[in-house]
Image (cartoon, rainbow over all chains, first blue to last red; front, side, top):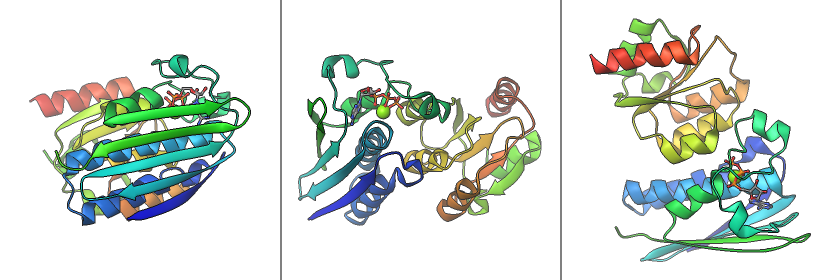
Length: 138
Length: 111
Ligand SMILES: Nc1ncnc2c1ncn2[C@@H]1O[C@H](COP(=O)(O)OP(=O)(O)OP(=O)(O)O)[C@@H](O)[C@H]1O
Ligand SMILES: [Mg+2]
């Protein structure tokens, strides 16, 4: 099963649409609620990062019987130093974004913790691709 | 203890999500940083915050918290309230500050 969502940079009102959509699908597939929670936490953080840091993006979801694969790709400034970005507390979020309670520098670490595998590739000035894979059976 | 019992004991206002007033409360978490809450709140806890925008309900729903309490009588955005109603997760408000409210809730759940 494959489907996708568009993500708009700067539009916080819509952040979380992909995560709540995927949650519904996984519930219908009777996936363990604990596994669902990990998947949607990671996806939500990825969506918010596109909204907060990039111009626009897309979430591609591919589910088969054993695993879910999520690819979050965006057009945006890219991440110059991925190891640095992965560190808890590192954030370049704007003052406006911080005021909303984002920008703690915990999103990428949360994604890593809540996915079985995470792959990040990025080109400065072009964009970022984050791939998340998680087993559906616990 | 249920959300409705806590509302009565701590004199909270219900702003939205009445459907969830019977939710069982297992604890609480106080934070205004959304990804901190994403990473650390547990299902069934009450989340205490000063944030009032809609993403609060997105996080609350994905983590399946028992209820959200907004402190200091801050006013929730219109779309925060409507999402709380859609999700059936109670959105509550208190005149107390986070410190005071967290202390009261802790006492209540401990006792
Ligand atoms: N899609 C992206 N495009 C460009 N930069 C990104 C992207 N995702 C993350 N970053 C960079 O990595 C940093 C760390 O990301 P992370 O999600 O951990 O924290 P944050 O988004 O700043 O805050 P939080 O997630 O806690 O709200 C960001 O501040 C930003 O500099
Ligand atoms: Mg982030």
